[in-house]
Length: 112
Image (tube, rainbow, N blue to C red; front, side, top):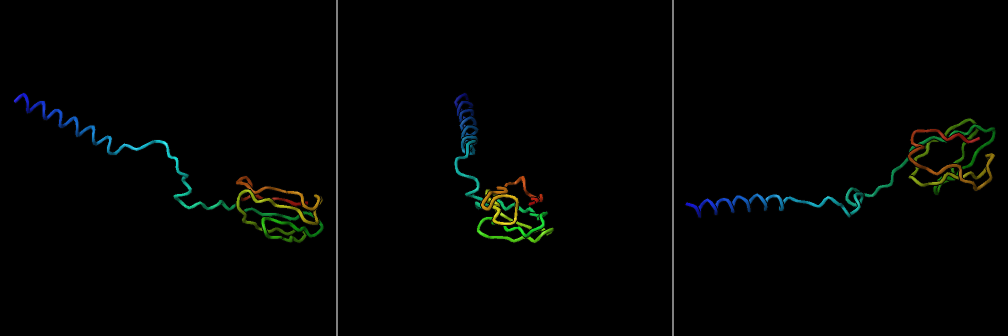
């Protein structure tokens, strides 16, 4: 009788310990999360408005955009892309007007 109680107690204790160790997982996650969910760069959508009296020519990424006086152009660019003035602004040609970030999302960039 005494052996049966000891054996049962050891069996229950072993089963409780094995269940927790079987479902245990590490808390640190070393693999990049975006590798699992598709590493897609965030696109930021914003508007560029020309408030000058002349036509403005901008380069954003690989594309060039011309904006007529008083008009706006919607842009959708990835984070880190630079918006560069080419002609028609008070800035020097080739100067960086803005670098795209989440702070521009939904806002208007005014060029004078």
